[in-house]
Length: 165
Image (cartoon, rainbow, N blue to C red; front, top):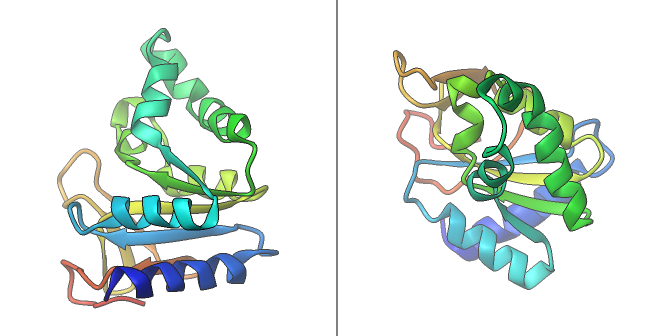
């Protein structure tokens, strides 16, 4: 699928999730498939806030102990979004949220943040048999979620057997 079509699909999904309990759109594709470029272009075209979560959150976690990091991650991520003061956020480079040391459920964290604002989050992974996958089974960061009630856009570059939803 072309970048233009993906951006159009994301825009349509943003409009679709407004008013839902979770205003979350997941852009699902493997690493290196162009998610960052798409989100950056969309931010420039629409005036949405693009946030590199790894960079922004790691800066705020630096001075905290390991225990404090796990406790404060949700609040710190919410503060990053609050600082930007926008209605639509494009979150990229979410890998830090999967770090086992932070003891977070990344999807639930994103959903919680998407109750008060619209979030488009780049998810490094794929869809397989009705499941949203991050990492491989056996990997410490492995996550698997049912796709029910999730709003998903794919780039068409899926690793798993399902081309998308």
